[in-house]
Length: 189
Image 1 (cartoon, rainbow, N blue to C red):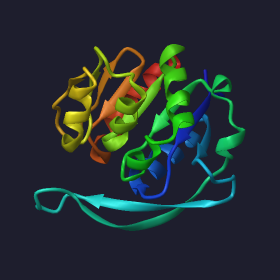
Image 2: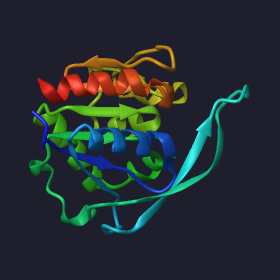
Image 3: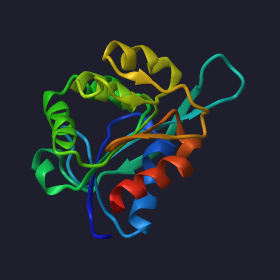
């Protein structure tokens, strides 16, 4: 069942691990992944941020790597993709203002295609209006957005993930093993 096409919507100051790890893991497992950002073309880079948990009341943020996009947002057709990945970090904060991004997200839910979202990516789900009646984990600071969207916030450990129908979510990058395992299950169904 490999050779499935996966769309990753990301942007500047996306969380470094939440972008690079799933991108590389999916590629290494035989999936075709197109990473895109509005207003950027294939071959251009986005900057990432490294979020870490160092004993403070919230995560710390440091400049991460430059992540090279391999597809052009304006040229993609969501109909040609089998699944969607939305990393967290700071990017969802501004990407949720882009009506085309939100329309693309709604397509994956309307078509019941697998969707993997981590951390602050829930901000995009909230803005797209796809959380009503759904259980969704996210970084705890995004709990309000999940609940305000009439979703059920899953308060799970930071290294765990949860699946509700076609949606797999997790609170942050320490959940990569559980989150990716559940996403692989959805991809193979």
